[in-house]
Length: 104
Image (cartoon, helix red, strand yellow):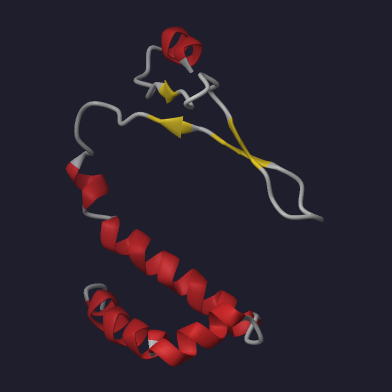
């Protein structure tokens, strides 16, 4: 990451090492799944531009819509059952209506 920052002159967050000093953390999963790997980055100094902060509601809405679509496609999953039991879809409608009305 340091090389990318140096080559392109961009701000790149530092990689936070694991307790063992590695830059990559290997996570073991139950069979038949193989391992997966993760990297943790430090927070970059500075502040998000105002136009990016203004889009946070959009990102939240997109995430909720993707979860709703997944639950609709995979209605037989535990996640879909939990979403139905918790009233997630009704809550989603209550959140979506005022959000969408901003664009009408």
